[in-house]
Length: 163
Image (cartoon, rainbow, N blue to C red; front, side):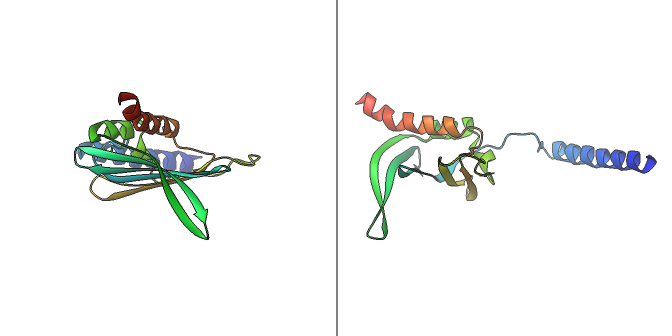
């Protein structure tokens, strides 16, 4: 019993030291990660009805957002542009951070038992001067996933509404 109490005290001390060291250096373990800049973001969605892809390319103060349908024809993958819009990069950064995109890195959402179909997603993004974010899931999504899809849909369709 005494050994167990000593082990708990040692673990608590090590954890406290790690937290304090991070705070002293200005890096709290509890700080939300942030996307300060991005070069590209690619979100691929696959399901029973086909595959689609959102692609975001930063071009200075503007970002080009494209939505593609992916189809296989004669053994080759075909990427058909369905929609494209250009918007302010600051607006896109706000969306990415509101959806906590930086926290998605390493997410692997396993397919839930008993679900026969659903959506598979794969995200790859180059952010913050070259950092690569990767996430994937099968009918299991990170926090902010729905908000990101809704935001991208809104940005793509905002241009049509304003014309």
